[in-house]
Amino acid sequence: MAPVFRNRVTEMLGIDIPIVQAPMGWIARAQLASAVSNAGGLGIIETSSGELDNVKAEIAKMHDLTDKPFGVNIAQAFVRDPGIVDFVIDQCVKFVTTSAGNPMKYTSLLKDAGLTVFHVVPTLHGALKAIEAGVDGLVVEGGEGGGFKNPRDVALMVLLPLIRSKVDVPIIAAGGMVDGPTMAAALALGAEGVQMGTRMVSAAESPVHDNWKQAILDAAETDTVFLNRHTSPALRALRTNRSEALEHDTETNAMTALIGSTLDLYFGGDMEASLALSGQVAGRIDSVEPVADIISACAADCLQVLADLAERYPN
Ligand SMILES: Cc1cc2nc3c(=O)[nH]c(=O)nc-3n(C[C@H](O)[C@H](O)[C@H](O)COP(=O)(O)O)c2cc1C
Image 1 (cartoon, rainbow, N blue to C red):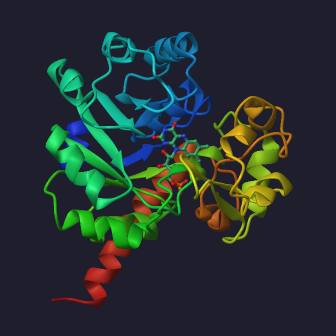
Image 2 (image 1 turned 120 degrees about the horizontal axis):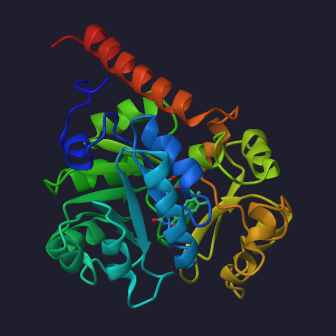
């Protein structure tokens, strides 16, 4: 597979298949991330849990479980530890995504230490700011995706080609990425890689409780809610009694429903204990698959779609 997808993302990240597993608090740890890296994609270890001692142990595990590259995410709004940059540099990783914060804050420190830095952006304005900060690339994240979002959400179909038309750096597309056709569409719109969140939550190696995986399998495309549009951070989660009650509530900050009892949902399986951050693409996921199968099928089907299109519409 190696030469087939060769582009700036595979070159910069040192991977064969430009599929990146999303950073996700408590979930994006060694069990999941090593499976992704070993399958030829890029596993990413989270820091948004704020549990830096545990994260450090997970990164040590990564060095045992894979000899392939992997990355770390700094979710700036959630990790306010002033030592976070030194912490990441000390872990001997080469690739970092920064998200949920000002790209001016850490980019030059990380780049001076020799790391490749991609910043996650939900708008063109954010993309231009990240370019000004000197990032190597962007993760362009559409509002259909799971997790924390810009309150003024923009679908990837609009955002990705818009940003592509204004910047030259490599782009990883996030939001709705799940299979070969979505990956091929992202490449057509100017991305050189894709990032998967919800698909990876529901993967066999994902550590979350089976109730969450089953809820993703059961979900229709309309079964997520967008919360906190009135404040920040906004977030997208599966529809449950609890999340639906918050959907039109402009008094309550939905973060109060997330924090505190997060792990009772994530690992205890109580779907009403917290918010099950997930994207609209839950409506397209019908089975729990091993990461290696997800990645190999996605890569092969993407190439097939591109080949079919070239044959059908020869120039
Ligand atoms: C459970 C969950 C937790 C997330 N946590 C983070 C995070 O810590 N940092 C971050 O940059 N993005 C986070 N995200 C967003 C993902 O990185 C990714 O961009 C998004 O899931 C892509 O959309 P998709 O869910 O349609 O694949 C999270 C997403 C989910 C589903």
